[in-house]
Length: 226
Length: 330
Image 1: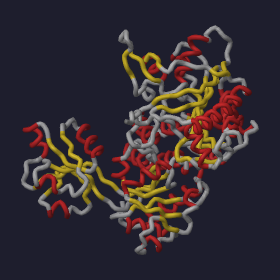
Image 2: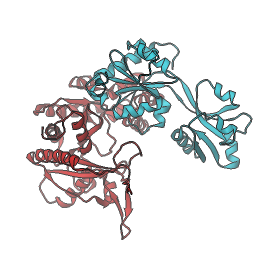
Image 3: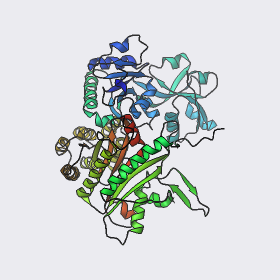
Image 4: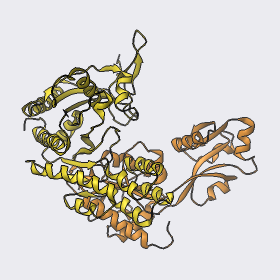
């Protein structure tokens, strides 16, 4: 299988995101007939045989890197990741409707509203992992902010006074609530997407189109997904 | 003590240099045998001359003042400098002009992406031969050039810059919606295209479905059949033009299939007709591109149709290595 990975004419390689999205992604793949048993096991391996295609697993934020370079032909990751890495060219083919979440601006409960804060002080300090999305959002509104990039639990930043607020991804809002934070503004909503490399999209078009069509069918059939 | 060089630039050592030279000489031989003569233009040009060609997207990332305070720029491609050269130097000569070049071009990069700030281009410009015949000549030469560097398996994609906007105009979309949808298509966000068209409220459900289908329509002659069933008058006209080019191309003796890609929208703004991209399964990036730009020469004061292609030398080399062919003389 390892020899196969560098063969440009070998099986189609699908980048599968580990983490919160993984369960839903594997369920979707099951429904379109891709074998996910190996990935579900507790192997430390990163590459799995999915039957018709090869599954390569990685962090969601690495998916655009691998797919845009052609190291993976197709991949699944969140719209938030694609927006944050908008300069990596990949085809965005299908909205899979999985892992719905929102990118929000949140501040501590009881704080004055960010707009009011901004009116008085003119400038806010915002902690985030999503520097480009946050930058674009505030810029479009003509608001001046100082962005502090942090890697770990962002909720900590306003609690200890590193920042006035945070821009972060929220699914249920539980983490925010447990850390005395509340949503003030919604920046965008995100779901999982099927993406494809620009060259694979042409050269392996039958396989890419087939996968996209099968996923689209399953997504449209599933009740209750956006 | 190590003296660093700027990110996105590189030294080329003897072994690689020999391989790059082999690519160049294979291409030069192919270009020459087709009657294309090599020219060279200055690396530095006046910024406003380059912007004249394509103000929107080809604005150079590297501009600076010379000793007299004039604004200079590093070229982002060779098509615009050659358009300037032909308009200024060949004005009195009888067209067509068949020119080729081997040159470095310069573009801005995002750090740590392995992108090149300075990269090699080899290409041709065919100025003064209009329509299907001109485009087919360019595609035929591209086909032979790829074979000459040992990339028999790479694929030539052929699209048309007018298809997308014509379909949307026929469906009654406003200029603002067309601009927005085109921007999304050029950035390959097909999910976004569908959402933007639907949310605009200007198109019916069927028209949105047709646009989405067009954006993904690619393959052989059968996609033209399908395209003839879509859109209205303006779109039919654009399809007829692409069909004409495709038939002309198919009539030439090519050593590979041409892939029709009706959703192809190249980022560079000067294309007016057919657009070309080159793919190889061994490289994840586009290894060459081009098309027809009949409006470009007139910006330099000479009304002549034009078409051409360029190949990215470093990516051609990478494709050769990935395919296990170290040198161009296979």
